[in-house]
Length: 300
Image (cartoon, rainbow, N blue to C red):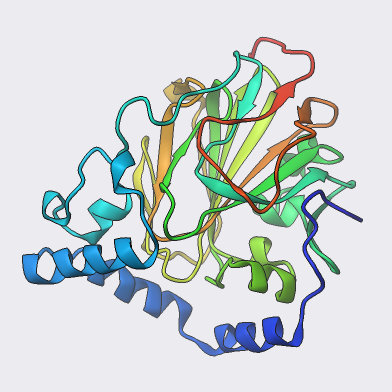
């Protein structure tokens, strides 16, 4: 099984760098990160922000606020808003846009239930979406794209297509790093990490937007529920959302990450064509075209 953007085989270095993650108290470290990134003392947060921006080469010119002093704490800087107009939305209503600033890790077809992760590794749609075969059925033999956000990127998540929120699923799990070396070395990585699944009805049929947590990703938020994690829970939590009648336009913000992580998009079979020229590994901005809907049908 292959995906476009196929990575090289895992090296011994990948395994050695990934091994300590099995031993670390991942959630405890992430909760400490949550506390650290919300310290408001100016002497601390200003230096932290300045160091981070220089180290990761953050593009200040795109930010709405451009000084460390403009932010209450580090997390406010990390989830910073951008200036109006710096992320234009490409295409028309049938264009699937990139929901985040991110590099494409993988994209391609879902083979029955299996999504390609890296050479020698795949994971199941059923597992990714919380263990319910009926929830996963519309996406089997469909298509997927996996998008990796590095720490320097813009960390707000937007709608790839206009749609209505049908259901959310919180899935507990580990918090392995989602850096490229761990995706090559750790089996079933995205189906093992803590995540939030948002299911939408769109003109391309059902669409899943999966926000995957990782170590130091100390918070996943949505615009409809606020902070989803923390706290950590031990069981899958399903929240029906149809009665709330929440619709979001293509390009509208739906959530955000603290620290780098991954978004996975799922569509049903024969519904979306990915652009042939999509550059794998290269960061694409939120709003750039990823593909198009084959035969748009009004969402129910």
